[in-house]
Structure formats: structure tokens, C-alpha cells
Length: 490
Ligand code: V55
Ligand code: FE
Image (cartoon, rainbow, N blue to C red):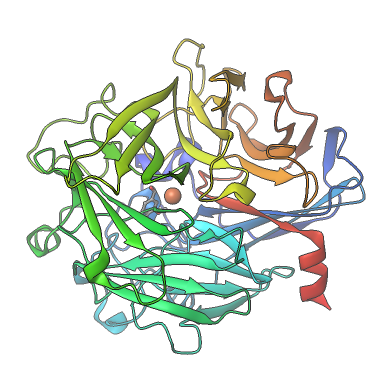
């Protein structure tokens, strides 16, 4: 019998859901284009069991994948937990065995040394495989059509790092999946690994290197010739874990680094260049690209920590004003002899996070970006679901060519989850396609999937796909083309 705690992470809009579901032919308002063929996958943390330690944070819930399969103007829904090793061990025991987020000292002794991963951070498609990812463990492979879990992979044993990021990229020229790991020799280690994986699933390259200090290395960026690692001081130590403090704490006294690793054959840790700037907060990256000897890196930057549940290590109270993030361009020049940044430029006055692009332009000069935007001027009647209490009430688009923005507001009793771009066809121009995103209907306790014309979001959704169920706070998701899914099913 489960009794969840009466705390922020488990009540109201953050109440656990815990179902798996199949719904054939969802109800639709508006029209799904008849030639839209493929699937949108997204993940949400959803705890299978009452937390071992009495309370928990959203980031520690068990990953559950939703699949919206579009075909012939219709949409089918499938939703399954990722059957991680943790999920299976706990199901067998009938209770939670793993304790606090990224703190193995709090686990039941029976699971010592087992993968702690929850696979709760993204659903990623590459080489016809669906990967469910959490940055503290290797990748979990699932069947992209049935959502059956195959289990953890180390790419035929070739991956020697212990972890795999939840933010891999696909190089649009090679089709390779570019990824990394941190804490690659175990919890809190400074060691990192860079990986390149072919569409056939072959690990082609693994490079080991070290961080200037331990930090949450949540996302990164690629360009044609480089991998870029931003080191932002959400940091930790064994003292924190032994004291039972949250794994990460933010240190406003440390500088921020941008590491530039050449992707060329034979590159090693010796070839990394670390650029340095003053303290700030940045987590996700919209995109990066080269321009001559300069490298541009676009990220929502905040003055201070955005994670209230990973608090200031010196005890400063969480500051919601300073947690506001704005898309900012960090530029470094490989021709300079200095470790200083070339420039830091704010690109938009829309406050937002969860940036996305037309991924055919990954690591290349690009024009369009989309993100969740907070418009504080709009009225709010209901809030959530959320890891942090932050309200995401708009979909935003930025056009780097004109500087013009577009915004669509979801109303006072709804909130939005991360957008995902779908190209209209493989050779459509940049931005020509659709945006999908989950919309939380907080008044009805239900969710919708919204479909927009990507370059005309301001007119509102062209189709609203109605779920009779409520999805939880979700992280990241991706689109898979129908031809890829049919090939995998055959
Ligand atoms: C994030 C989410 C995570 C995590 C680390 O920035 C960072 C988001 C859902 O889990 O473990
Ligand atoms: Fe993320």
C-alpha cells in the first residue's frame, strides 16, 4: 500500500499518476495534417513508490514515456514507465530501495552498486532506437514502436565511462549521435567522457578529460569542429552527501567556464581550451555555431541559480528575480591568446527556458529558435505542474535574422511543457514545419497536445489533441519520422 507525502512534490498539480495507457484515436479539435507521419515522444518523472526518505524532488521520479503517434490525420497515445534496473528492483521489493537524488549513501544496502538511473530526462531517437536518458547512468534502449524496455547499453562494451548525458545531439552532416558523460569514474568524480556514436550504434570515439571543478553538466553544444561544455557552479562534495544535503548546491563565488574540445580524429584532453567568465547560471543550450575563428553559444542565462531545490551553498535565500533567464549569446575567439570571452550579448527580452531549434541546423548557423516563455504581465489563476514553482505560460519564437519575436499565451488556467520542432519534409527550408507541445489544463486536471505552424505560432494551435488524462511535469521530448518507425517495426 502506498501513501505519498503531503508535500509540494507529491500534491496538487504534482500528484503522482502511476498509470500506463493505450488510447486509440484521440479526440481532436482543429485538424491534424493528413501527411504528418511520425511520433512525438516525451518523458515525465512519475514515482513508482512512496519515497524512501519521506520526501523527494521532482528530478528523482521514475521516467515514464508518452508517445503520440500521428498517421492519416489521427493520433494514437501510448504511455509506459521505463523499466530501468531501479524500477524492476523496486517493483520486485514492492517498495522504494533507492534514496535521495544522486546520493547512493541513502540507498537500501541491497542495491549497492546497481544503476541508480531513473531514465526521466529525455526520450531521444537515433539509428531507429529510442533512448531513455538520465545523466547519472548509461543510456536505456527501448523499442520505439511498443515502448518495451530493452535495458542499459554500453555500445557493445566499448563505452568505458559510467554515464551518458540526457542531452545528446545529432550531427546533421554525419548522422552521428554526439554525447558525453560526467562523473564518468563514479559519483562526484571530475572525469568526463566525450562520445560519438554512428547511426548503426557503433561507438566511434571516446575522449576522456577533466573538469576544472565538479558541476552539474546537464547540457552541451556542438559545432562542426568542436564540442562545447559550459561549467556552471551547481556543485557538490562528499561532505554534502554525507550530511544528507541536496546533491547540488549553487556557489556564486566560482567562475563559469566554457570548454572547447576539438572533435577531430586524435584529439585528446590536451587539446581542450577553457575560456572563463564571471559567475552566472545557464543550463540548456539553444544552439552553437562557428563564424571564422569565433564560436557562438546561445543559452538562456540567469544572474543566479534557477533550482530552488539545489540551494545556495552559502545559505543565501532563493532569489526568483535573479533566476529569470534570457537567451544570451556567449562568443569566444579561438584566435585570441586570452582565456576571456570575446562577448556576451542578450538576444531577446523574452524571459524563458527549454530552448529548441530545427535540429537539421544543429551546430550550424541558424535562424529560428523556440522556447517556453514566462510572461509575468499575464494573469495567473492556476500554477503548476512544476519542479521549481516556475510558471511557463507562453510559447515563444525568436528569429535571429530580424530580431523579431513571436509569442502565444496559453491562458490563466493552463501551463506549457517543452516545445519540439517537426520539419514539414526532409528538405523543407529551416523552420518550415510544426511545433508540438504538451499543455497542462490545470482547471480540468487533464492535458492536451498542441500542434502549431512553427513560423506562425502567434495565431494559436492548428490542432488541439485532447487527452482524457493528466500528464505530470515533463522534461524533454523528440520527434521520430514515420518511415523510421515502420522500418524498425518490420
Ligand atoms: C535537469 C533535470 C534532471 C536532472 C538534472 O535541468 C537536470 C534539468 C529530470 O532530471 O537530473
Ligand atoms: Fe534538460
